[in-house]
Image 1 (cartoon, rainbow, N blue to C red):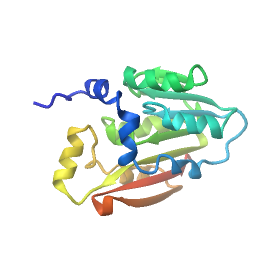
Image 2 (cartoon, rainbow, N blue to C red):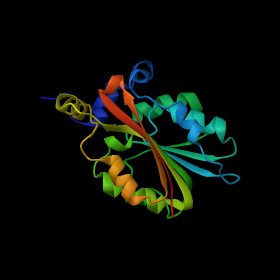
Image 3 (cartoon, helix red, strand yellow):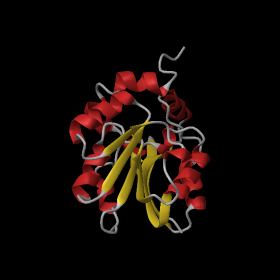
Image 4 (cartoon, rainbow, N blue to C red):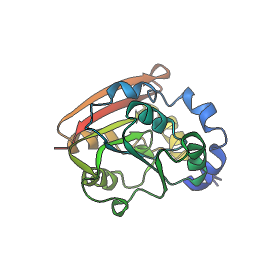
Length: 199
């Protein structure tokens, strides 16, 4: 029986050493800022699955006048993010559902290794389109694919779905996009950057 059958229990444990270990395989999180777009004054930004706040820190530094919101379903991860950021961003403990925000709320939505961990990915992407303003930006870095069945199954144990075809769904949903794919550990898996405009 998998002792981490729920993400809540999984991150109860992993939050204690998340920042110390994830640099080893969550590639591209730091370089994601190279894809940050120019946004209007006082933009509204959502970090979806913000975890311990790594991307929130980068966003706050790059867009100091922005209203930034982070959403995560782990209280333990949010506690760490709160220690880093205090009250400078809004942190919401919740699953990502449409009712969380009004239509056309955000100038940019960011997902850093979070979308492969959500249930019903197509439904969540519809939420993103609903919450993004017209001409708003979606920016994603995440696991893409692997040629190895054993690795795909191991990732599923760790709540990462590499079978859903996240980036295929994204490219079909957002016509105006850029996609960059890189290898991790000499091809053990690939990860991709995705940047799109909501039109």
